[in-house]
Amino acid sequence: EVKLVESGGGLVQAGGSLRLSCVASGLTFDGYGIGWFRQAPGKEREAVSCISFGDNNVYYLDSVKGRFTISSDIAENTVFLQMNSLEPEDTAVYYCAAGALVVPSTWYKDYDYEHWGQGTQVTVSS
Image (tube, rainbow, N blue to C red; front, side, top):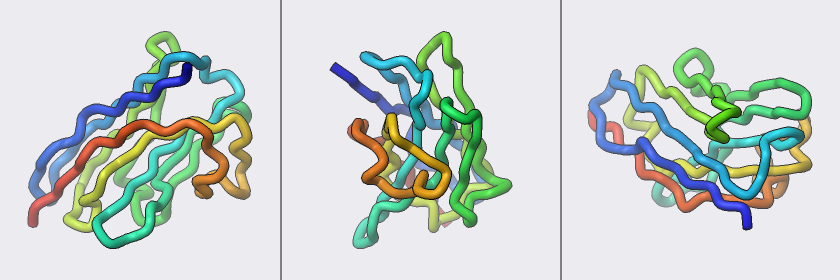
């Protein structure tokens, strides 16, 4: 059974930083894409970033480029999302997702991901 567990969310002031972690069990990263998505109240879920172990690429939502960094520790089966210069607009539940069919043209589509975590709340106060 594949399981993804997120952690690291919390309450932070604007301009602050958080690092989210996604620990995966039941799969190895080889060939997978691991994505971070977020969903704010009343809004649709959107893709924030993805690390593709199949082609060694990383992808970012335009509004987080330069502020967020995705990375991994393969030995620990963990993917991180370092979030700096946080803004109130970043407030959302952040989800980790894993997909065996993630491709560059659709990395931001949630249907590319078969496995999802439960989410971790990130709240940025102004």
